[in-house]
Image 1: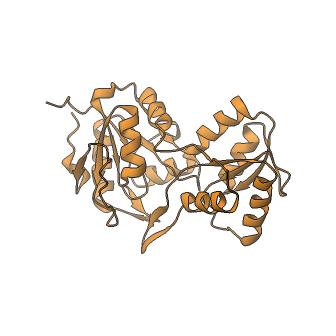
Image 2: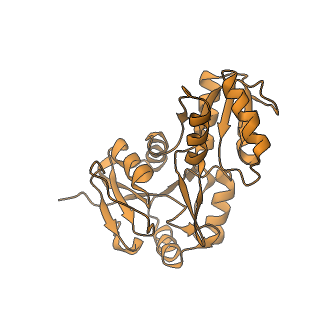
Length: 255
């Protein structure tokens, strides 16, 4: 018999919203949980915005959450730069929040191929010029760091290419490139969330729409994984970790 659920970690994209459109049932359930005081944290691979930005969106939807309880690969990037790449020159493909993280961690954002690191995140101003510069930096020996390995990201009218597609491009263009992946399925973001929640592993669950990232991260962190069926492109694989499948968040009953 499973332990009672006392703390919840949830993905954002594909669970709470698709693109910029909230998923009404999910918002209603999360609002009810937060109103009851259920310990909640959100863990996303999306680096297009800061934790403060995401918390602001959630609060405007009526889901009470502090920025500290929204964990993104940006926090993992800061830690990595401070611990292993102090003062690095960094070429960034990503949004303003990702570039700011580099500066806050003591790195220097550069606009040419003379970089120690290439950092990949979600970039809605991506251009061939950026791709060319990053490629030359990698050919010059830069290390590739990616916020996440997702190939697709859910949006209102379907899906869009995600950071993992860029990783595939660069590893094809520069053979021998081995990317460092910051987000899920690595368990570090979930471990940080559990620490914030003060939650016991056996009483904590992770909710997501992707087995390759959310559910594998849950398995790596040793917690129960729930996959919500909002991803119509999901195809089961023989090596998928054991997890539970739900159609609606309300099927989960935290105590």
